Length: 498
Ligand code: ADP
Ligand code: MG
Image 1 (cartoon, helix red, strand yellow):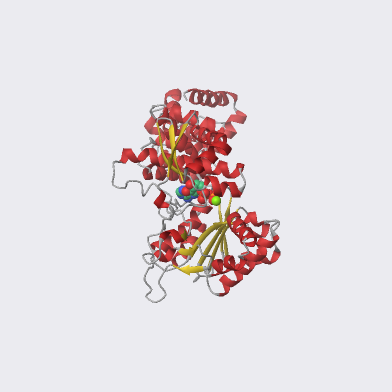
Image 2 (cartoon, rainbow, N blue to C red):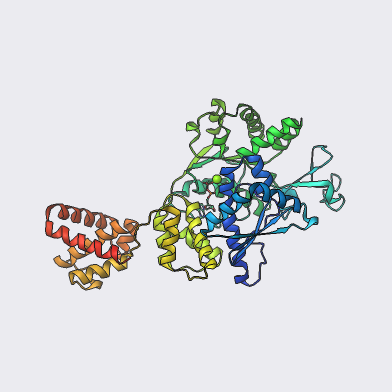
């Protein structure tokens, strides 16, 4: 989810160095919770979301029991009274079967833990409302946390999710421009002409991940920069709160003191005139002093409805980069990366099956993987292709049969009595060539492999050869009824084999 509490437990921090298997339930819980947050966000208003869902930390998911950590007993009582059914409904929906919920109350002294390794990445606010103060002693430049009692301070984190990095962002044709632009900005924030950097694209395609990656890279590089990530909704809520508390100037000063401001999903500024005004002035101040602004949106700035023209024109001052839906190879690479990060081994055909069915949203792709792991752990089942089919069916509702190029080759070879290895060889003998073309055609129709991949499976042929084969077979199907019935037969055989 977009706003992360500063003390969120992550896969990286859970017992690093411990037995891998013992980490798995926690990794699954994290993943499940990420999906649940999406659901809560769509179902409750942003204040409730912030107050009652953001503070919850997923701890583990094991044997059908989901454990969450909550800040207090009062919090649990309130949650149970007002949001219990939503909680259960969301977790059950994500996991795919009934789940029991357990709570642990957060130990008291952990009321506030600065997230970052370095104090200069956090800004501390005194509860005596005397505005913002750097977490450093003004005279010595030393961190002053030891001098100031903890309970009089509250830490504002940069809200970056440490798991969203460039290292685990898979590059593909669909996102390579946006990734390269993001990397350039991360290496030289405020120092490129990419200011603001606007990343746009559809839901679940990696915008949030990429903008966090910029912030995380700056932190890794050790540069002393004040960074803040906010969703446009959080910016709006904070602004409205500051009006209510009569602290608008604190709000403005806070934003204007940043070196890097990241605002996610700016399309939600639509129609909010006052918020747009204050954002406009924040933007100008930061821009004029050479600070970096990074924005994300679901559309290119010029198509954003309900946004002030002067704001849209500023969004176009820098660089706008889009992210498109990923191709099959990228989807496979993403799943493989998620598996290896969670130290989970999945066979290639299961990965390929999920990737070829879930095509338009990387969050959904991950969702399938999570459900698969959750179902396997809950029902004590092995992860099989059958289980993967059930899960994908329940997530996207419509599964295409899983057929591999190898299966196509062996079925065609058997049916047409042509040695299988010749389908991959160079021979141009007529009956081999036509069998090869049929197999290529079926690979194109029944798998979502790219032309390049199909060509590689047929003895390293070029993608234009695959196109040619496809067209030849299409032509023959429409002119030769006998040929048509052969292809139809083969297709039925392959689809039935699933
Ligand atoms: P958006 O903000 O565009 O809706 P997110 O950044 O939230 O999408 O991405 C959804 C999920 O997909 C996240 O868990 C993210 O880590 C993952 N994801 C998206 N793109 C990639 C990628 N290229 N490589 C690895 N994971 C990705
Ligand atoms: Mg997002």
